[in-house]
Length: 217
Image (tube, rainbow, N blue to C red; front, top):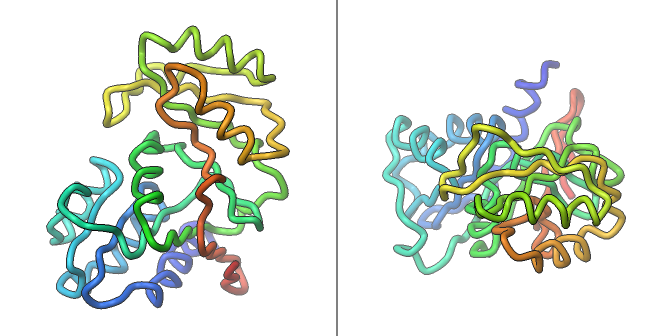
């Protein structure tokens, strides 16, 4: 089974967590795009849909949805998103697509965060995928020096600007033995907007699609 087929299966497996009349949050990435295709026939059952990125908003509008601002809804009932890496503890690395700040806001605002991945994303320890960090442009060099002190190898994602007008540093070679501690520590560095560690607020449900089955944690 190809990776796209597994992503589509993971997306379909999220449907039982969606309820009529709910406020749905939609993340960003290739697996989420299969999810948007999957829910396209259910346009009228949701009270509102909130998106984590301009790209997903465009996809949702193209599928016939109206997209609300987070400030226009009281809370998100279910937030569905993918991940670049995930552990059995439901800790995640996200931000390969650069939408980590808005993704983290929606995850924090959600009553339930459902993460959909194919089995290539499941790892024993986070960190093989470089950790995305969104930074205020003026602080990029300062933040990079702090990340080097923390044992990482920061590489500027040159030419990329987030939907918030900021820049991304991808941090390689980190030893992420304690994701919650590292997330909290990096959040204290002035100039960092968001760290792509989703550990202090992990996923509530992790759906993993393999060639043979769907596993839920």
